[in-house]
Length: 206
Image (tube, rainbow, N blue to C red; front, side, top):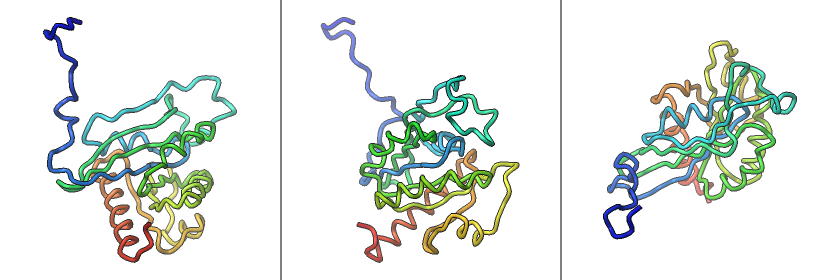
């Protein structure tokens, strides 16, 4: 590089720059068990090219990572996924997808720091992997909504049955989604924002 000024360090791409109309930014985390669709959701809804930390799965994960229902999955998030979406001209959401394998959960503390709310992605074939995830959010006081990702071969249950199985309060929204579709993922985020707004109006959001 020529340090006499003929070459310059490139700045952010035009498409990645924050809109000048943005006045507020909110950090949202997308959590869930291994293979429930967190990386797919961030990628489908982000208006910028998402940052991912996926690595190829190897023999070392056999017997360590539970990939039930995800036999065709060849890569996994080892740190985080990051994306951004504008909800309005003034409000921007920063999205952080967490790693699903339990051996990487030590990274969650940093990702949860400063988060206003969370989306818990659920696979009805493996509801049990959601319990620890929701427990961690409750321990940290992070409000969340539950989004049931509609895998083609996954059983579907009435909302009341899902609420009972997950031991969820009546106030926590449960929505169905297809994280491959941008509109569907955006609807989930809008559900979370409405939930956070309702908590703020009642003084429950601190």
